[in-house]
Length: 337
Ligand code: SER
Image (tube, rainbow, N blue to C red):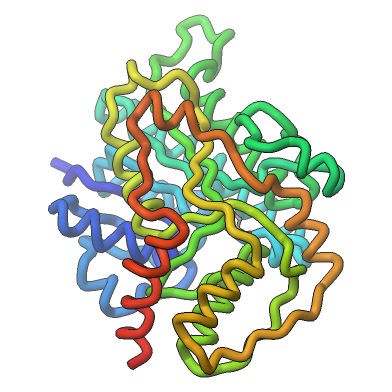
């Protein structure tokens, strides 16, 4: 008899860190995949760790043979800045890897006879606004507006949202005996995420977490976007809560497969002010990288998350002030003390 477990891909990443601790606290047996060995603190919490790539179908077959997976948190991805330097590798991981995982989930569902709940973090990068005027006029962008991303990462995320919807509702629709619904695909479009415990790498929204962590470490920071740059952000605990809540909600309540999430939308200057107040010695300067700025300017300043609030009760704990005062600053100060 195979053991029933949760599979987390990209387990070593920023979301993985927070999620694995929460899943372990809930008593869920966890199986992980990451290209790098798990950090010892995380490794202790999981039942089995596989070091390898989601592009390796042989690895997924081994997991299929050994474990009964009823839930997948598919977090592995190459983020937006990194993906622009290696677009084909990004496509292989972000799209090829996701397709492998969806097929894996379908076969898991077939083998144990229940749909596999498949959680997928998409991104505000799935949007692409053509210029700043349009961004200002667009206000709170809804899920189906401005789906014209300008990055490889954004294209990958948007396409995989559709792949997930296909697996959930239309898989092999012309077969003589169309497959039963085996993949229960649920996706959130995350804004930029800010964690007190980890620093991201390879993203374009990284200026916010980088600024905060540099100040806490007493290091100078040069911000690569203009002070008036505005995109949505969210504190990591709210992102983890959102994934866990969406995973547990009865599927009848869901009216879509991809949901916007929002918490607060500060400008880079507003983030700088709060950081400077918390760390008066912080040295923050500005040197705009026009190419990365172009990417950030194509992402909306605000998104409309009414569908998530209505369908599954999404309600972030932290607004801008609360995220800094009650979570980021105290936790980061403790971390670097
Ligand atoms: N934070 C991500 C990035 O900057 C967007 O999802 O690439």
